[in-house]
Image (tube, rainbow, N blue to C red; front, side):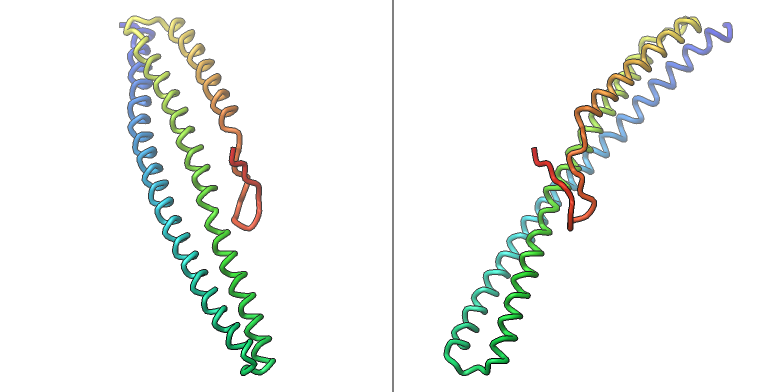
Length: 182
């Protein structure tokens, strides 16, 4: 067998191997992302309920304090301090609830990552199909032509995926940024 004929089976084995191994790893990544999204959603839901319950309890406490203040039995300095504390508590609770919005951000990022995994899976399928199309009798020129065609197909798939997945989350931290929900 000539050196040119040996190249065909090796390229076929390489492409099929890359396709198979990458697909297996992508499946694991997708399962991990789905699990992460599920756990994140559950945690955020519980945190939201806890913060709202805390807020409700603080409101009740503030109402009681207001009744005591209105009775006139509390010195003016204490009234002023209590009002400042009430404002501070409300600010902290509002800030905490606002931080819970990171679920929206992370959900968008996880969704985009899942779409990227799907795009990568399509690339791996393309490589597998090309690997299957290579015969053990392929000449170097045939291989070269097939590989050029494959590169063009992969570049098109990549460009299509990139245009589909324009950056939707620009936020780098919870304090600022832009969120495109739709």
